[in-house]
Length: 453
Image (tube, rainbow, N blue to C red):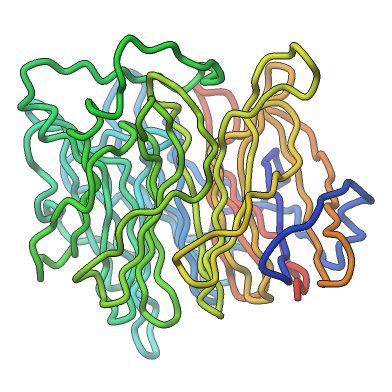
């Protein structure tokens, strides 16, 4: 069964085509039609009837794309569903439930069900899904796999070491160069054993824009919050890579064409500074480099902003990072505000100076992907005058002139938490759309995603 392709709805997308290793400047200009690409605004709507559908993730390889999300009954349990497309997101098969135990999912915008694809010669890729589930005294991580192109899924298994005491989640997964799925996640088992849990948490819907005046340095408390790494097949023992991670911001993990594994997260530095950190493994995850700071943003906050980083690796093994942070207001005396930034690393040891991506209002929840053309495509939601709206554009760099940014506001409301992936002829973006009590998942294709270099 195919789901009918219908009219487009709101989303927020910015495409960034980077030619050089740094961005010199950004300027607004033109309409989206001037970008050199073409758009297909006839999107697909994915939903389980009579449920609230939210928190999507997307993965793609060529013509094959898969979207995972949570579908919640009114005042009831949440299940994980996956729908697949074999024509680069133009149409999708009927959604299939992933979890074999009804209601065995606990999801949010910063921790949606994550999925990754495992290549198989001459056949559809395998689809691997990881999600968070409630457990006694906390949460655990579960996994399931489809080897028939998303038609059915195996019984859920626990992610190795993903079921300790306390809470864990905010996971990311990727397929490494050998075809094994690896995961990173935030793990709070040591907080569960602490005599006093004092880690404050903010929640979606708050502004997260204020500087804190903490009574104590949160970096010491954050040492009990760990970043874990492990393989889903249990071939090695999952382990903590570092402590001091921000309690509930999403993580990011990616594989480079040379097999390197990259990980990023929000870290709590001394003074309650919550900036983006990064590490890389050149030996398949056996060892990781000491964490480095992507940018000295100095966001002071005694709590979690629920606003983590995203990253993607291009064909030349360059790492592209996008993240939100707090900046001073644009005028003297104005309040600090959230802003979105972008940086590149060509060696995994240092990043270019951050470049601010033009936004309006409060940008949140960025995601990023590399299109087949080489364009770097980011997506986020943007709060403007009390609503969420959509922006499309591209940063164009030719190495000879200052970088130009072309931006178009598409309008409409109710678009949050986008996810983006490269497909054969462009990119596909999925997001939660509509009023919270009856939201659906909308998928949009941006075809011909522009030559960036």
